[in-house]
Image 1 (spheres, rainbow, N blue to C red):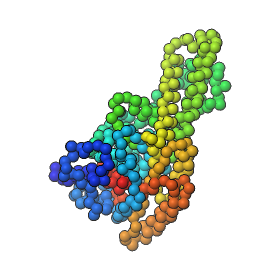
Image 2: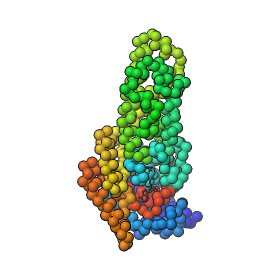
Image 3: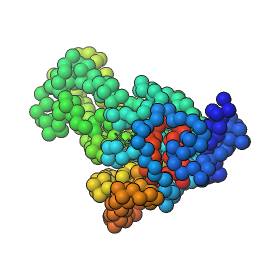
Length: 410
Ligand SMILES: Nc1ncnc2c1ncn2[C@@H]1O[C@H](COP(=O)(O)OP(=O)(O)OP(=O)(O)O)[C@@H](O)[C@H]1O
């Protein structure tokens, strides 16, 4: 028990850095437990070792003896945490750069600073459960154990969400778009609507649609009173390609569905012959209603992504020229779509070499070159640069995420 208390104490935040928290201190956390990690503890492994505890699942026996470099630029966390109005943070970037770790560590930090926080994964390859080392699957709100204030996680199952979407098309007993359009009383217009590519969309959903549907599902959840309490919502989004396609999807869907519904209405009132087709049964109306609701939610997703007052997209990258180039393109696309981007996290930076490890020295030099590329990149140089060190163990579980969060989110 004593060990557990010491362990909790060492990782429990609510340190002085949270002075700008808009919330009162959590009375559940005793005063003596307001400890941050000692500055003498530089690595995740030494943090664990100093407390004589073992991480949940030890990494391989190979241990990189890196010393976490202090972040050189602060993230502006005070600004992120202040205010009780709801804010959304979307973290995105190339696959494997550390989006989930950064998103989960931010969520833990928000919760430890008094915000009711929700962390959502819309990445088809979920890793929130792995990151928190807890089972968060199921597509519903799951409480995360560990932080001081309520933190909940939600992993949207894109297959299930897509099935629901596809069910709309199957409502009329058909499977393809032709049947769907027939069911809507618009069979004869399929040809005319060809250029909208709705058929392709419904029959073979492009990458990005999954995420659009997942996010619209989250929007649907957020409309319910159960979700009112959340003041910070952190999204762990899918890799770059999905995000880019996702951005154009709401507009596309909005236009497509909107056009179809409008067309359907026009024809329904114009010709009695078609009216008789429409008059068949209610299921067609249900399908139309569902489509209309989906369209409305898509519009909300689009607006949410572009609302600079409540939303920010944080790009996560690693210090390689390839990753930086991709981040630059992502930043340009986000800007073009009017999505607010202010911060860039460069994750997994090697510390200055303290040993005679030649490999480490060469690798770090290479990473510094990538950082130089960022400084001279027209898209990225204006962003707030957050340097996140490569720590010497895999980041899993709330204590490890808190350790990372205290380094990254300052
Ligand atoms: N700064 C870091 N130091 C050490 N390990 C890290 C760091 N950041 C991330 N990792 C590790 O790298 C791996 C991948 O991280 P993570 O799952 O966060 O990436 P991701 O970008 O979300 O990946 P994906 O695109 O596959 O979802 C994990 O094992 C994580 O613990």
